[in-house]
Amino acid sequence: MSDSEYTPPKVWTWEKDKSENRFSNINRPIAGPTHEKELPVGKHPFQLYSLATPNGVKVTVMLEELLEAGHKGAEYDAWLINISEGNQFGSDFVAINPNSKIPALMDRSTDKPTRIFESGAILLYLAEKFGGAFVPKDLAARAECYSWLMWQMGSAPYLGGGFGHFYAYAPVKIEYAIDRFAMEVKRQLDVLDRQLADNEYIAGPDYTIADMAIWPWYGALAKGLIYDAGEFLSVHEYKHVNRWTDQLSERPAVKRGRMVNRVWGEPESQLPERHDASDFEKVK
Image (cartoon, rainbow, N blue to C red; front, top):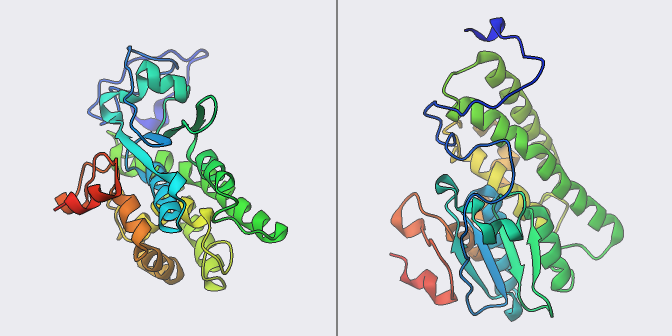
């Protein structure tokens, strides 16, 4: 049946996807755990359960930046959660994040361990935990930083679940869906390009959590590293986004953060688990 012939039923019912979509075996319309699974706990104050998707990279970059800045209390263990295998539906993981999405963080330095889920919330929590690190002190500048952070959280679903899904993963290529989301993603890149034309970093002259949130998604897109869509979207046109992407890519903490919980790409870019700073030296 073609797209134009489809008429939605009065009541939607779930029919398990039998296509070859890579996410078919983990998508479902209900929440909650599917199996009992205890999560490991390491020796450090922060226990991160994640994968090096763009949302996961936000948090590992933040933790590495905190350590780079001398915040020794930001030491962490990073445990791999393989979402393609359904690890996010284990009972202990769901207890931390009832939404069953990575990343999920436990702060075990508090009297009662504190759970934090949603990548933006984790960035804000860590910034506050470490005295406003990577957040402007001036109220107006802080508002700008927070506005761009929220921009990323509101915009990226159009890039990932929208464009990425229909362009790269959907079993049937639907012209209307791809065109609609490609248009929106290019509009978003233009928003960033115009902002970065007048600012060194996303929220102004200083590097902030807004950069850490946006770079893993839109920086990767600008370099054609996600969805193999660089040529299709003409990402080379966004020169200010590319300048900013290259600038952040050279930061030592960003280089390390991008490696953590990564299980694809060149072997030297992968660090499936991170339990000590020396782990990076073992990667060959």
